Length: 325
Ligand code: AMP
Ligand code: MG
Image (cartoon, rainbow, N blue to C red; front, side, top):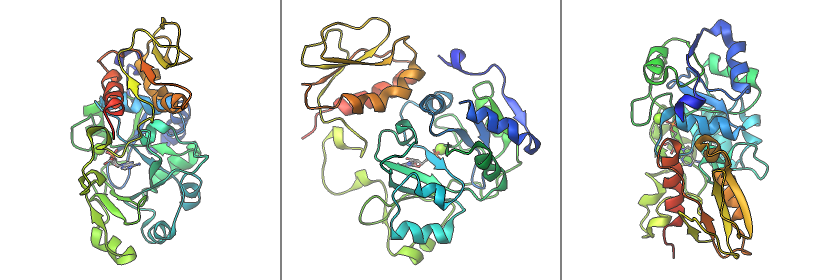
């Protein structure tokens, strides 16, 4: 799959080539760029296929939600629902190395894959002038996880990015070494108590000074025991999922993959008719949501190959299919 989607060579761009970088992003290509924290691997956050390509380039075995980079608070407010805490923190720490996780707005145009199917979105406003100019030129929110392969350390120079991703992304914008060098602090504001999901460039004490005590760690650490399917706060359909389906019942909805689908399902949605895993990843969360309706007895899911992005798709499907109370 990699060879089919990735460009043969990665362009090395300088700040003078900003328009080129913006044009590539607008066309759905992947462009790495510096921020004050680390180099990010950017894609148009509103383009499902471009976001899917991020996961493919990073060779991630799982979908995890990505941080969305915007130009200012007004742009942020178009994507998520702000509350008083968010307003306080934005005023004090944006632009800067703080990512806020907030509920997606009803008409949020950001790809569901960028929030890994969650109802929330992590947002950040970078302070570095280069990504700021780039976001402005693109005119859309930009999804950007760290520009390294899965499981490797975050890159703080363009050289590091090329070591990891040369030939897998369209371009890297070289702005020299990153100033902060560690990732942004990630703060979850979707619950009644703010929760520190990842320590980073803005200290927890500074946040507590602004909005009071924080809870720490992942929401999955919470005391209430939950079944495996619920272990992550990820979206799971309310209908049962039947994986590896080669036939479909007349009461079922069918999530199809590849040119030939079994007949007989009440409704069919294709992840990818041509059997393309990047396209399938791009459609996954929207398709699950579209089929998750009470008029069906279950969602039957055709087998998805266990390679490339198929690993992350199957990981997600297996967790959605796990028994729940
Ligand atoms: P990276 O992509 O390497 O910059 O890391 C992004 C971090 O933000 C990861 O730890 C994600 O799990 C976290 N994150 C991003 N979006 C969300 C979200 N909607 N809910 C919870 N955590 C998030
Ligand atoms: Mg990372």
